Image (tube, rainbow, N blue to C red; front, side):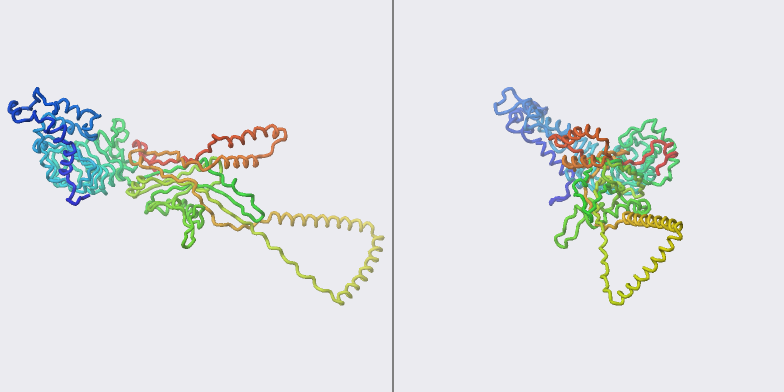
Length: 618
């Protein structure tokens, strides 16, 4: 950030800070409130020492003790500023005791620590060299991109540049402060593994503490190789970098740096060092990947939308509901096709659906627009559980293992978090009824046909006479024939029944509408703890209440209808109990259960050499 007058420098900000302290304004400095004390006559009587107020103080002037109370009292409007350091407070009180000493030469020799935080500083200017005794320079949360080490006082022991915009510490290495013991460049934009060339003892022989956290540093083994040269290093911060996401990060660092006392604000104990002993040799060439496991256990408090639908008619609509959970996760371009194929196929079927219940009609072309919560963010992939029917508690027990090589996008994703969505899918089907078959019109009968029918009747009479004669002679045979005819009739009846059963059992054909998706709940889950040293993030995601007392009542009534019928005696005894249960939903203090999801994500980190050898991350 640069103003119209030029860049914002440290010296300009420092002088502005002195102005805010009011070292030359009431109750500090010299003025009408202490004019007699610093008169020329009174100064001569004290011969160069700090003058005191004479006994005959004019009523319009204040004593030193009264002025001190004005800056020390919290209720006073002239009290110390809230962000005032101990040096600032002492300086204001000194400006009351001896305001004549407050000059530039004194100030530049007085300060041993300078704190300029969140002031928009962009440049460390050469005026900083005027601070002859400066040992500590805190410039956190500013906008510094580069540092000219020639403008840093040689007496400097602590340089804190946390939360700036530096892309490399190479600029510091041309003329580093020789006595520097702490260097803080966390939360900057340091990128890659080349920064390991600039953190060696060649440039920082006396470095005791180093903060490199929350940058984009990669390649752990190269970074540790540079740090191994810092024999005085005791405190190190690397968490928040992509390289800290690999399973062997802490063990490898502890084993390679035996002089280290604190890593990522956690003391390195002798027991921990023993557990990791030899890990640096075993995993020196280990591939640097991150392994994360996402677990979605169960969902409760889901609305049973089927209770709001009417009973279908013969042709429909027949409505079926299913529910599933989605979450987005970063995609590793190298392994995307293999590792995520099964889940992606399942998700794309639902996300590519042309109709959504949360669709907003476009006024221009009336085309449906997908709910943005069903689309993954750029650079991420949407994952989904299987679809399951409604239940008061839907058990998914979904588990997905993610293996990622590109760690910089993973770090950026963890900072943003993952969006978890519970989706309801509604499928509407219509039965296709067969069209009635028209019978052909009866044909007209002519004279020829009547003649044929007449002849047929005469032949039938002759045959009947012959049959009567044969019946008398062969009574036994006729009995057998009658038995055979009865059997044939029974067979005919059976075939008719079979045809009817076939008609009943024949599959019905349905016409399906495109599925309708509705988002029941969506929530952004914070995953940043995985960057700050945690290996497990668990959360009971609460999406609010989507059910009402009325829908819960309808769901309960539906469940009672589907239960098996019991004996009449028991039914009568339980009717009164059922009525009491229904009144629960009508109570004014009744509160439906909220929509919740058990979510868990774990980052694989080895806790010992034995674990790394016997149970390596998949």
